Length: 377
Image (cartoon, rainbow, N blue to C red; front, side):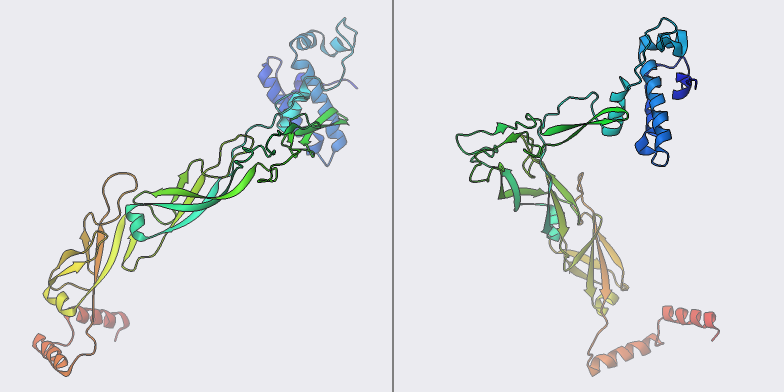
């Protein structure tokens, strides 16, 4: 059976660049790798061998030149070429390893276990409405791991040092070699003797039991800026768990939860407050005292104020988190209906209704007219 053209196998033109050939090979290798083709593994295996053979030739400048001149005969000895094409994976194998195992190319390389940053920590903190508005600086107690001070994080007792693991030679990994239909496969796994640390502690530190880390409770200052809201998050750099193998600590994230206020609610940077006033104050008007985050202020209520009317107090809201200035406070008045009236008070109200000439006000008459028109009564 005659061999297919190498360029055709990879799906590239004869003028394709080295980079285009490499990309085409990777695409085809993914498509026909037996692990990706469980339904037809034998067919995929043959196809995979063909595209790998094509790539081994076309990725090598000298071999590609011979192939362009003599075709497949360049490698079977009939044209005076090199002959004896090996059919193994050669140069393409590193690309396959890169693709499926995320390696850095090549086999036999050893990855030294390097410094690793510690884990981040989360702390939920409850603050008052006023603290959210104006900010606060406080201390919180955080449980976390730190390097053991007795052994300076080595895990070894005083006067001793950890030793390089003889099984993995300090790499933290051991390599397993397997022979497959595609050649030698080298797989790396965590060393079971040192558990990936690359070193072994023979005489462990008594304070940390050889772990190099201890659990502590550390007081940390937290500065809450003015203007934060419920659910805001603060990041405190390098106050998380200790790093591994000399790596930096993680970060601490403080999540803020604002307590409900007895008088105020909030919408963005606006403060909402409801203030009760009497029937007489609403009717005749008055000057009342209104609570704000800065203390009481005077508010003039004009006569004939209706229940639900909202007044604005500029600059009495929440400070802007980023930038200058503050929001406003909105005061909603609620007119209270008199309760437990004396007989004299009732007489005066009846007299007021008689003087007014009707028992309901014009707005109520308009409302009842709309009801009659809507229901035809």
